[in-house]
Image 1: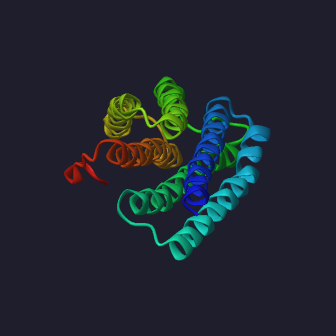
Image 2: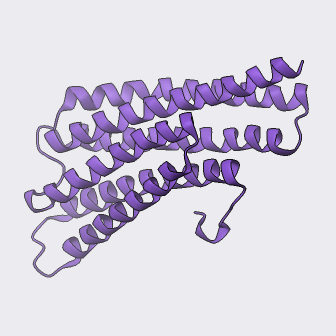
Image 3: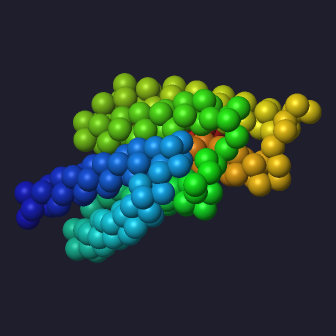
Length: 218
């Protein structure tokens, strides 16, 4: 029975890695669609979000079944409970990728943000994609150095997010109301995507080391 239980825990980890991979693909395609005004790619991200939702639901059902049948304690219990929380964050990250793609679809054939902000959003998108790929690697390896890397990259996203607000609030801003709304929404989506990755990274770091810093929790 113990071997069966350990195999179930490995299955949980494998499913988290799979979902993270789907999320990484989604944000990669979403940010490309956003920056290039690629409506076909945006539509594919929107359609494929249901795959992330389904995978997260299946993982949740497995975790709940393990809790009910195996009655895990100590570290095993933390692994299963953390998996449920990580699954929820991954599902939200998929939703955020969909929101970014929806902005691209709504504004097609125009680009979502004015030319002056495009380099900033290109950088934010690249960072989110890097973070998502690193998150997949972290869930697969539980290498705490990767968790620290994700937190450092999130700081860069935060800086870019603040710079967007500085620009749209500046007296020199020439964008219209829709430009302002789109820019602030898109920037918030990029920032929240990275925040969820940091939240997951902290949970994995805690499982690996036992260290927790609740003051930094979202």
